[in-house]
Length: 465
Image (cartoon, rainbow, N blue to C red):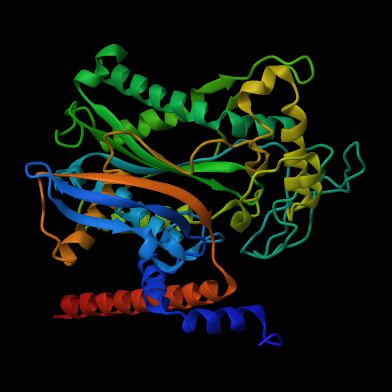
């Protein structure tokens, strides 16, 4: 036995334990979570009228006297099973705000709905990929910057070229403004939405303070890192009536009116940073590249984007971590030495160093740049939404728990009270349980893929019939 690898020895030990089948049940219940949370404790359900104990559960009867629950990490690089679950929740959350469902009426499909992309401004020329075989940055002559770097690039960079997204000259690149733009991106979005409401109110001939009496602007947005490690924002924007999705927008609230307001707001909104003796004051704004496209009003409509395609795009991206996009790391950096050892490109490392250096200045202390150096200064959630857009992650998880409870035929008990006491005792797997969890996760993913293919095949047959 001593000659066997640790994983094999652990598997043999687990398989011969009397609690092995229960352990396998727990791992399966977590969906093969890669980093489950370990809890110890108990829960007791009593009848509030008679005081009778209806149900009692204690982890002392469990393998290792602990219960495994999902880590719920959204990043596929950290936990693929939980990230797939999170992506599914995101799909339904976004789709409900487009087509209805989850407390949102189906009539929202008739409201003005747009899918827009807001980009960061330029902070310096970078190498870019081209699909048409054109050079990266063609330039007549052989001009050079003050650092001796060429001002142009005649190479053709394929999509997998590591040089794509890197600055032509790191010395000329404005790393300070790049980091500060990330740190203020949330404030820039907030001012953008207020500017959209202001433009809509002006178009309707009403004051901005009376806008909520006529309409409500709802949105769900996701942040994505570009190859140059700059965040751009994809957002679904919907115009509702004053009570949200249950009421239609006013007559002046059309797709064209909303599009015009969005373009005007993106062009004019700005944020000024705090003045710093070291860097001065910066005026931040959105980039000049803006894409605004309407969504289809009906399934038969050929114009515009499909609702499911937009929801699937957002859901697919939400599971990506900083490591996937090549823009930062999935864990925080606690010392400056961590910056030197992080597995990132020189460009990203320079952005991290800019975060670290600017974070030492007192005027930038509220931005907590050192704490967010691993995300290059961006400190917002990847997915955010307005209150009235659709349902919440919490509600979706509660629905899933209720569905599982109904599947177990657990009777509803309104006149009961539950007392619980839980304690965190650790996280992760042993070598053997990690192998078991990986197998469970692969089986579930395979079954999900088969079910999706069967559903798609049935849909095609239905259309053919």
